[in-house]
Structures are given as C-alpha cells and as structure tokens.
Image 1 (cartoon, rainbow, N blue to C red):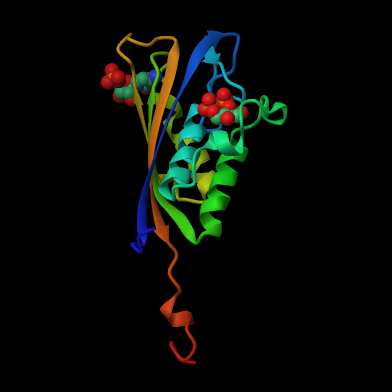
Image 2: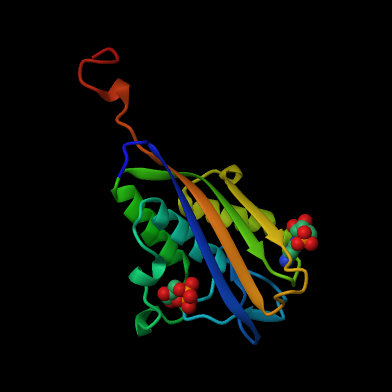
Length: 172
Ligand SMILES: Nc1ccn([C@@H]2O[C@H](COP(=O)(O)O)[C@@H](O)[C@H]2O)c(=O)n1
Ligand SMILES: C[C@@]1(CO)OP(=O)(O)OP(=O)(O)OC[C@H]1O
C-alpha cells in the first residue's frame, strides 16, 4: 500500500423491488413505499454501499465476504451492523472516513423529504458531522422501475500521530 495519507473508496449495490417488503435506506424506513427491497438482509442499499466503499478504500474486500448471503445468521439483519463492522476494520488500521457521497437511483417514491434524516443517520453511524454526508437522488427515468441502485464514494484519511503529543514537544 502506498504511503499517502488519503485513500478513495467506492461502492455499488442494487436490489430488486417487490410489493410487501420494507424499503430501508440509510437506516431510515421509507414510509408508504409500495415496493421494498428483495434481500437476504434488511436490504438497505445505502448502508451496503457505504460499507463497501469503506472496505474498498483499504482493499479489504466487500461486505459479502464478511456477511455471506448464504448464512442463516444474517437473514433479515439490520445493515447498520455491516457499516459498524466495516468502520471498525478501517479504524483498527488507523484510518477514518472524512466525507461520504451517496447516489440513490429510485423511481418512486420521492425521497427528497427524507434527505436530511438519511444523511443524519449515516453520519451518526460514521461519527461524522451531517454536512460530511452528501445524499443525491436520481430517477432511472422509467428505465428500471423495479430496482433500487446505489453508489457511494468515501474519502479515508490516515490518523497521524499528533506532533503536540510527541515526547519533548509542546511544552513538556
Ligand atoms: N426517488 C427520487 C428520485 C429523484 N428525486 C429528486 O427528483 C429530482 C429529479 O431527479 P431526476 O432523476 O429526474 O434528475 C432530483 O432533485 C432528485 O433529488 C427524489 O426526490 N426522489
Ligand atoms: C448483506 C448481505 C448479507 O445479508 O445480503 P443482501 O441483503 O442480499 O445484500 P447484498 O448487497 O446483495 O450483499 C451482501 C450480503 O452478503
């Protein structure tokens, strides 16, 4: 791995939509959604890409390796657990997320009214200020009405030893 103190991560996810299922995005239950995500977990396509972006930034693989969709123990799981695990793997290596940008492509319902709630929810999971989580919504222009697609980038920074904490520096 190069010694640069910055890395970029990227994630992409998609779930088929079906009637009678929950639609959860960024840890927020979308009210009155006629269609929800078909998935092994709770199908939260926003949290899945955020976790995959965190992992890819440090070449740590993808969420399917840590949470296989063949494992009964992960059936219906809360995807916040996936982000918590990905974040822990990043932090254990001395890195932190700086900001996150997420794009959600979904035809219906309109998600604009939930933007702040979703950003707050993702930010809280990553211990970031709300302003460091950008959430964009797009329609597929009718090309994929039974489909939710998400993409995310994350900037990671390496935590550097604080100069003022070094022995003999900063007034010691
Ligand atoms: N599920 C969605 C999709 C889009 N929006 C907002 O609608 C605007 C137009 O989207 P286009 O894909 O037609 O460019 C844009 O401002 C989106 O934020 C939405 O709220 N919910
Ligand atoms: C999250 C996991 C595990 O429950 O399953 P899904 O909810 O189906 O999600 P996906 O983004 O297809 O892949 C990761 C999986 O291993």
